[in-house]
Length: 427
Image (cartoon, rainbow, N blue to C red; front, side):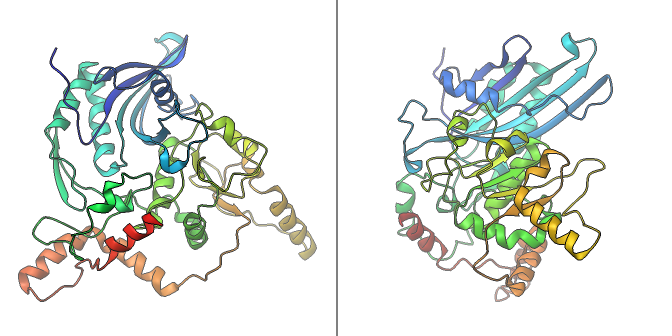
């Protein structure tokens, strides 16, 4: 057998099945022996939605979903290991849930998972969406086939647009700058900025400075809560504990990614889990009756779909609920009646916090945090305009240069960002 060549993009590709007798288990992985037994078990438990409801109502129906998770991979180390000394793994999942009365117990669940040390979501989520159907078409040999296709990719270069090919798909993806990625980051990351020019080179395909999850649309998951984004921005900058509740793994992992992108290009400074389940090895420590520690050795940003976490983490001060279900309300429910009745209802709502979510799912923010800054409407308008123009920015910039080299409208300006981010990382 020829030795397996390691990829700069991914660690492994695996398939996970929901065994009706033993539960979630790893079916196959390529390269072989890429995962330790504890890591393989953790990957398996994060590869499916929490429940089998699946919104499948017919006797023969299929639902495909895509989401991603983040795991600590150093369980053999001391449980008290500092966050900066921990190692993590990202899993990008294509999950297929099929309900068919001809099957044993009427259904099955299988997932294909792309594993990587870095959150290269703009490339690896599409790769999972390609690898999943291929696996269901040709079987376990798809693991090795996709892995070898990734070996043909050029190594990831920060800030440079990469042209990636798999199957009949050609994908243009941009790798985030390492200084914008959540810690822990390799020490050598800081050294590579010492001789860099202040502005990205226009000849190497560089674009504007991108942080983690730069491709995520912030507006979609938080469209009903735009008035709370400034508060959430401060909560994230300070790494205050925040629970994100959503109806599905795809929605909660996208929402967590959007929140991290909200403070980009600054990296999120604490541990985060885009999709967290009760099977995570850190769950027991998270449910301690003591308040969340001031240190960052435990997650402080959690994406969950199981409402049990509202009971398990009652001491957490911030909860945001996104996504809707049929016939459910959006936002805060209006209270009718006398002024005294409304006041009593308001006090009751503050007292109960997010506990009403145990009944009906509503989109809302429950927080005791008081922002120390005021929203800058002019800045917000600029951010909204920038987000709206971003898909057109590259074409417009190239067209402007063609018309007049001196015309720099829409050309990103990144003066001094990299040295600043490196300095913040050192602090």
